[in-house]
Structure formats: C-alpha cells, structure tokens
Image (tube, rainbow, N blue to C red):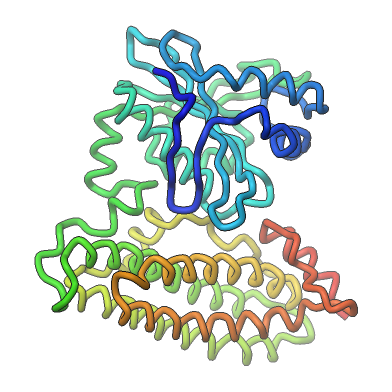
Length: 383
C-alpha cells in the first residue's frame, strides 16, 4: 500500500507524511534531549536529521519491516505536534507495531492518544492487520498511560532486555487484537471518546434538528461535561492543598468558581438530555473518555497552583471555543449556552493570570507546556 498521498484528520490534528520541505520543524523535534530520552537514537544534528527525514520518504507498507511515519500538525496554529509511526511486522501473521513522538509543547493534552488511536484505525480498518503491539522503555510512564487509555493490554515486562544508551534497560510490551479494537470502539472502551458518547442512537430530539446533528452536538457536549466535572474537582483539590500566606484569599477566590463550574456541568447535562441523549457523569466514564491526565500538583504554594491552573484553563477554554465553532451551524441554543460558559471561564482565567504577570506585563507561564513547569514558573512570582 502506497501512502505518499495519505491525508487524515483527527479532532485537533492534520496528519500527513513528512516531505523534504519539513526539515526545519523535523530537526527542531529531533534535536531536543527530552524528546530523545526514551528513543533508541540520540539527539540529532541537522545532518542526522536530514538523513532521517530522507528515510521517511519511503511510504509503502507491503513487506515485513516496512514503516510509515505520519506528521501531526496542530489545526489551530499549524505547528508540528509530533509524529506517529506504523510498522508492518509480519504480512503472514497480520502483525503491526505503533510508535509516536510528541513535541514537549503539546504534552499533557491527550494528543499522543489521539494520534495513536488513528494509527490503530489505519492498522485495523485500512490494512486489515490482526494484531498490533507497542514496545517502550519501562521508565516511560507517560507513554504507558497512552497505551492503557487506548485499551492495549500490558503483556510483558522484560527485565534488562536491551542495551539502551549504555545501560541495560527494562522493556514493557503492550498489544491489542483487531477483534478487541472493534469491541472497544463499539462499546466505548478506553481511548475511544467519540464512540463512548452515546451507547444507543438518539431516537428523538428537539424540533428543527435532525438526529444525526443532535448526536454530533451531544458528543461535543459530553466532552464538555467531562471537562467541567473534572475542573470542579481539580479546583477543590487546589482548595484543599494550597499553602502559604495567601491561603485564605485563594479559598475565597476559588470557591465561587467551583459553584459556577458545577452550574455549567448541570447546564450541559440537561442540554444533552433535552437533545435526546443520556449524559454520563460517573467517575468511570470520565476517566475512560477524557483525553487529558490528572492534575499533577499536590501540596504547594498559591503561586505554584495558580501557575498550574493557568495551563488547565488554557486547555478547557481552547476546547470549549473549538466546540462553539463546530456547534455554531448545528444548534444556536447550545452555542449560546457554551458562549455563556466561556464568559465565566475566561473571567476567572483573567483572575488567575493577574497573579502571574511580571513587571514587564508578561504572563510568566505563557511558554510552559506542563503543569509542573507552569507551577515552577508561577513560583517565581511569589513575593
């Protein structure tokens, strides 16, 4: 199968093969130590990047050992998010292998899961493979979490299996069968949020909207319901774990926002029901369907938590705005509701950022991409 002209789209990315014109962005990714940490190659200089990019111009999957790399580009800004690799390991046995590399600026947003899920779709639905595996350094907990969310089974832990950059390293192996993938998708297993939004088709909805459009709106609303349920718990977690001289002030600032976000969750769930859907608010469905990781900051100062919350609110607001853009042509009532939610979210985000502005008028967390990094940046404004 020749994938030279392959193009695909996920919720937040455009996927296509690399071209030689991508050298600058390719090198930027491959020259980063944090990217190469758990990969079999070291950081690459420009010559090594050019050589590697040349190899990626082979775009056929037909023989054992063939592999194809798809570059994922952010829909919003066009930046390289990462790369997603599918290998054909055995034609006879229908075996494949997936891998992925994510740019650090896009970590913690569920994009690795989103891209890897597309690889499984390509492997099972297009190529008709029977079984797909993934192998990783056992220390790479973030990648293991991605594979678990995809519903892949942890099959083996190999002790000191490979000489890796001068030391013997353990390896974990994950796998999923085509039949298991089909079942995951149909039943809404881990890693398949769009399939999980509705366990049965909408049989009725509000007058003036057809059921297909209603199902699309319900799917988007379910993701917003998970986001608001998660956000209210995260805010209470911060309330319980903030320490330092501004302890009381943070409590007084956060508690009204918790109430506001709870009201957003109620609005969203009731709109799903009004459209003929079944809103899901159980902890299990939230954990299985969400595309983000748990809030990672525990006991910490006011400024550290506010720095991390800046990153949280960035993600919630960006995804809500994307939902508004999609829903605008489908259901103006839902659009108005989400715009109202955005107004409250963005107002509180302003309160957070007011505490993170430095003397030069810059938000100190603006260049961070992880909660720990944002917390560290926020700590620098503590005075």
